Image (cartoon, rainbow, N blue to C red):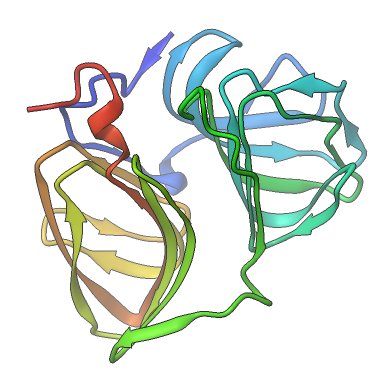
Length: 223
């Protein structure tokens, strides 16, 4: 399967216009955002787990990165409620579950094979910084390949995000507009290498997750 697989093009998936699709695992549904491959794939998805979902132990050959959007996700390390960001790098393994149900944004098979940095951050208890008026930032991860963060913008705030190395934006709440598209809750936007992205928060502000720089390392995405 190839979905939004041309990384040289702008890609937008609106949550409100999609449908949940059943996965091969009972009780698990997903909204595919981009994908190259079948069940083992380089993929970005929104995945919804019914209460009581339990998974077989597995190893992350290409790494797993996720943000909990709703409910609580669990594994041997504990509970990860709404707002938690987790990176499980290549060679790590776990047996995840969703006792009361959960929805996550997840990216699979997108790590540097040599990456061994594990990250577990609860955004509700982490320290946010305010570097410019009207914007709070929580850095989630940074290395030579990519920068990952969450930001909260006050209503009407305008800012430029670095899209030179490619950019992904996933809306958690509020509204964000770049003059081409207006993004609302759980919308996903991917911009190719060499892009410019200047956006303005709506009257209720904007709350979103984003990743930049990483598309330089995807074959076929460079200018």
